[in-house]
Length: 263
Image (cartoon, rainbow, N blue to C red; front, top):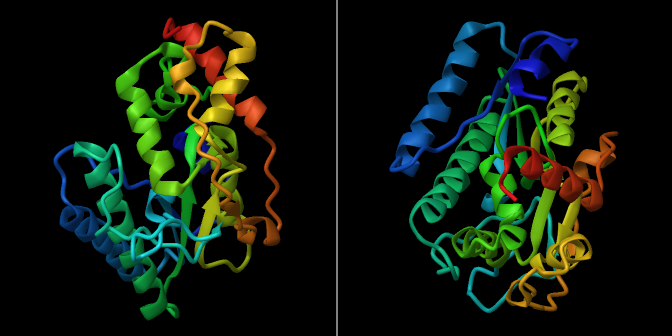
């Protein structure tokens, strides 16, 4: 399912889904200005009553502000401390994290200040896996397959996300689309919500793949033994139910990769 397939399925009107994606070399300031402009246009239209912003869990690191380690739980109260150096952080991923964190804070601030004019929902999605409708694997699917593909560069990117979040929050593309529809159709909803069905380590992913690909290089099984718990239930408490488990997410990533010749 794609964004173009989501829109016709929404049964209510006066909603706007904003899938903001910082591009290479863009700055946090550019991204913030963009979301502010979108929110302002929604309010000025007089017809858009809810803005659903596709955010990222990269903005929700459970790292402690003093750099002494991780919090015990990752949930919607977590915000990425941008002053802390994270291993494997370089170039695009560092800029992406900075932009997504600052822009989500800004859009939620607007939602608080303009609560009588616009409902703002941020849907912070995990690393998105599954097949989807693209004729090639998405960037996030490529990361999730980096261990099987024996691609050290992409694996370092995966490890950056793991170091940032403690573990890897992952979600199927179909659940992401369904969550957007749910947020659009729920009568009253606002604030920050996570969208991820599994919170696992890169070693767990590698061990699962190893069942199918026993030749998987052992260097990709890095046991970190972190005890951070997934504490987000806000979306489910509203009535949303995930359909896809870690197994299905990874299996669909594999099928997508096979079809495209990635592996």
